[in-house]
Every structure is written in structure tokens, then in C-alpha cells.
Length: 311
Ligand SMILES: NC(=O)C1=CN([C@@H]2O[C@H](COP(=O)(O)OP(=O)(O)OC[C@H]3O[C@@H](n4cnc5c(N)ncnc54)[C@H](OP(=O)(O)O)[C@@H]3O)[C@@H](O)[C@H]2O)C=CC1
Ligand SMILES: CCCCCCCCCCCCCCCC(=O)OCC(=O)COP(=O)(O)O
Image (cartoon, rainbow, N blue to C red; front, side):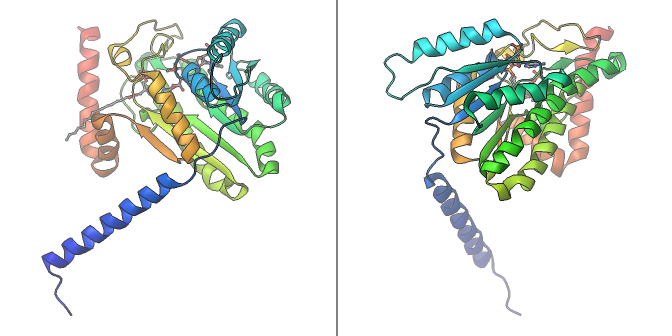
């Protein structure tokens, strides 16, 4: 048998890297999906990332259906978008709105039918609405765990399942879900939120595999901290509002930039996108490759964060 030399290994590695680079260049050169006149549904469009997604997809010429619980705030977004379109090069459309609560099981099916009545079909569903949580498992009522799961997991999957048959019939569609870095790693004092995002990742990974044959694409987007009101709106262990803008959130990414990344993911039909800095990205790899170290780091993080409250 021939001996493998160091030079041979290097050549092989370089060839491999070359093939990978070529593949990435070819993927980028693929024509992106056009959004002009596409019907794009955005949940949680009244604020934060959802509102920024509304801006970028509106500017790209999409026919928007904006969803949320507060009719007045959604109308405010419609007015802002309509006012901003004057003088735009792109042909833009006045968005429609559908008001419903994702955590209310009895309303989601009806809301899906109302969404379908807006334009007869849905091209892109951006499942963005969500709520976070701050709390210690020992002090958290089980109803809070359930409520967060209803908003972040059961509501979005019920909406997806209600819209899917129409996508399957048309042999076309794109389901985008805004998960989180916390759908890939679980950090202390976020049990309800991290669990809901892990469930989201798993469900939409299954969905991607099951519906690819119908020409339906699925993108899971996992951002790190974004500068929004997520922490302010978070619930605590007793169900009350947390009401604090956390430092990590305040120093997070600009939601407008994250919305641009969502637009890019839709155009390129990306399957799984992590939008995070080096430390969270490293933590995701560590969780898989060296779980013992990851768990140790999380325990010491829990001890540090718990200390001021205990003392
Ligand atoms: N901010 C961050 O650091 C990060 C956020 N994310 C994810 O981004 C997504 C958007 O959150 P973000 O913009 O940051 O936070 P915001 O709190 O600003 O926005 C949350 C949106 O979700 C809607 N919403 C909440 N509960 C419900 C419900 N029961 N039914 C219908 N709509 C609901 C709210 O609408 P309304 O109250 O008007 O009904 C609001 O528009 C979430 O899924 C979040 O997990 C992911 C990673 C990081
Ligand atoms: C040998 C070197 C090891 C280095 C590994 C360091 C491990 C560092 C841990 C990093 C944890 C990052 C957590 C990121 C959490 C995040 O970005 O969440 C996004 C959200 O969804 C925010 O929601 P929240 O309600 O928590 O504000």
C-alpha cells in the first residue's frame, strides 16, 4: 500500500476547500426568488423584528398580510409603510391586517382562513411572533411553561398546518420561522423560552424534509440578541411581565439588519441560518462536540446569575 504523505494530505485538503468554495459561489449566483407581488404573511408585525420585516418585504414589492393581537398598532404600521412608499421605484402594495392571538387555540384556524381570503393564497409565511421568559424553574408555575409554549410553538405550528394544504395544492410556498440561538443551546433561567425554540427547530426541520417534494421551502432563522422589546415583554415565573430592557437586548443587533438577513434567506431559500456573534456560535458547536464543558459553563453561569438574588 502506498504511504500517504503530508503533501498528499495538504493537496487533498486544498482540493476539498476549492470544491466547497465553488459550491458556495454557485449557490450565491443562483437567481433569488422574486418578491414583487408575492403574498407574504408576517406574524408579530406590530413591533420589533416583525415590523422591520414588514418594512423590507413591503419595499421589495410584496403583498403583505400583517398579523398581531393589537389592531390599532397594526394599522399604525400600515400607515407608516404606505407613507414611506411615495416616490419608491418598486411597485408597492397597501398591506392587509389580520388580528388574532396565537395563544388562543380556537382562533388560529379561523385566522388562517381570513389570511387566505386576503389574496387567495400565501407565498411566504414568516412566523415571527413570540414571547420570552425570565425565571427560575423552581419558582415557575407550570401554567407559565404552557403559555409560552402556546405562543411560541403550538400557535405557530397550528397556523402553519392550517396554511399548508393550500401551499401543497399549489406545489409552492415558503415557511420561515424566527427561532433563536436558544433553539440550539439552552441557557439557565430561560427554560420555557429555550424549550419552545428547541421544539420549533425540531418541528420545522421535520417539516422541511416532509414538504420539499411539494416544492415548499422551510427556513429556520436563529438570531442572537436583537434590539427590541422582547425582554420588556417577557413573562416571569408567576406570569407577570418582566418589564426590563436587558443590557444584552439593548446592545443587540439592529432589527433592520436582521430583517435584511431574513429577506436574503427567503431570496436564497436558505434552510438554516444562525445570525450570531462568535461566542454564541462557538457555544452551539461546543454543545455538540464537547457537551460536558458546555454544561459546566452553563452551571457556573447559573450560579453567577443567581447569586445577587440569593444574597
Ligand atoms: N429580540 C431578541 O433578542 C431576539 C428575538 N428573537 C425572536 O424574534 C421574534 C420577534 O421578537 P421581537 O421582535 O424581538 O420582540 P417583540 O416583543 O418586539 O415582538 C413580539 C411580537 O410578537 C407578537 N406577539 C406576542 N405574543 C403574541 C400572541 N400571543 N399572539 C400573536 N402575536 C403575539 C407581538 O404582537 P402584539 O403584542 O401586538 O400582539 C409582537 O409584535 C420572536 O420570535 C423572538 O423569540 C430571536 C432571537 C433574539
Ligand atoms: C472554550 C471556550 C468556550 C466558549 C464558550 C462560551 C459559552 C458562552 C455562552 C454564550 C451563551 C449565549 C447565549 C445567547 C442567547 C441569545 O442570543 O438568545 C437570543 C434570544 O432569543 C434572546 O432572548 P432573551 O429572552 O434571552 O433575551
